[in-house]
Image 1 (tube, rainbow, N blue to C red):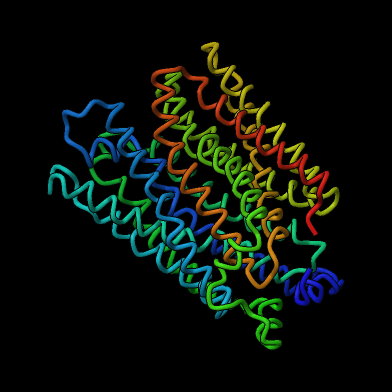
Image 2: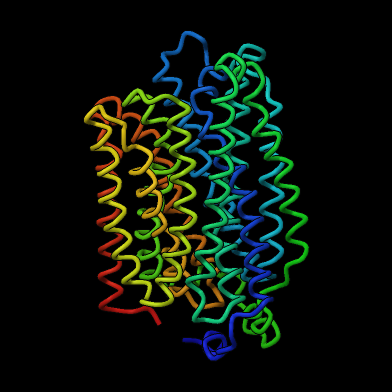
Length: 432
C-alpha cells in the first residue's frame, strides 16, 4: 500500500451527509447517461426494419443491429484509456463531466437520423458512427464514476458507494425498459416505426444535458486532491505503469468484468428481445418482465454492496455468482417448457442476482493503487467489455437461432463459474 492509500485507509470518519449527496448526484447523473447508451437495444427490432434494406430477413436485420449495438462496446477502450489518462493526471471530476456531454450529443442525433428509405446505405453507416461516439463516452463514464465515488467515502463504505453508483447506472436501464414497455403497449408497431421510435433518443439527449448540469455541484475527490498537494500523481503515462507493475490486477479485473458483461448484456438487455424470438412471448409481456427484473437489479446491487462491506467482497461475489447462474437457468428452462406462467417472478429473481455485478467495481478499485487507479480500472474494464460485450450480442443472437433457446443461460452460467473462480482466488489471497 502506497502513502496515499495508507492515508485514505486511515480515515475512519463516518459516512456523512456530504457523502450521501455525492453518491446521489453521481448515481442520478449516471442513470441519465446510461439510459442514453442502452435504450438502443430496446428498439433493436424496429431499428432493424428501418435502417436496413426491406428485403433483409428479419433474423439477419436483427443480427446486424446487434452488431451495431456491439460496436459501442468495441469503441469503449479508446474513450476509457484517454479519459483515464487525464483523470489520473488532471483530476477525476473533469473527465466525469466530459463523458456525459459526449454521450448526450450522439443520442440526440440518433433520434433525428433519416432512415434507409430516405437516404439508403448512408443510414446504417451514420447509425454506426454515432454508436461509436456513444461507446467512447461510456468508456470514460463508468470506470470514472466508480473511482470518483470510491475515493469520496470512508474505506469501509466503498462497497456501498460502488453499489449505489452501479444501482444508478442500472436505473438508467430501468428508465429505458419502462419507456419501451409503455411505447409497445400504447402504440401499434406501425406507429412505432413511423415516428415514435425517435422519442426515446430525443429524450435521451435532453437527459444527458441535465446530467451535465447536475455534475457542476460535485467536487474533486479527497484522494486525488491529497495526491496533487503532495505531488504524488502518476507519471506522464499512467497506463505504462499499470501494464508494467499491475498485470495480475488487470487479469483479475478482466475476468470479473466478463461475468459482469454477460449478466448485464444477456440477462437485462437482450432477454426481452430473445424471449420474443425464441419463445414467442408478446412484446408487452417481455418488456413488462424486464422492467420488474431491472427494478430488482437496482435493489440487488445495493444488497450486494452492503454484503461486500459486511462480509467481504470475495464471499459476496461467490454467493452472488452462484445465484446468477441458478436463477438464469431457472428462467430459461421454464420458458423452454412452453409455459410462461412464472416468467415475471423468475425474471425478477434473475434480475436480483444480477446485482452481483455491483461487487465487481469494488474488486477493481481495491486491485489498483490510487495513483494509477483510474487507468488500471478503466483499461481492464473497457478492454474486457470491448471483447466480451462486443462479441456477446451477435454470438447469443446467432446461437439462439442455431443451437436453441437455452444458449443464453449456458453462456451466463459459464461466466458465473469464472466469477466464482475469481472469488475463490480472493478468499485465498485477499486484496490489500
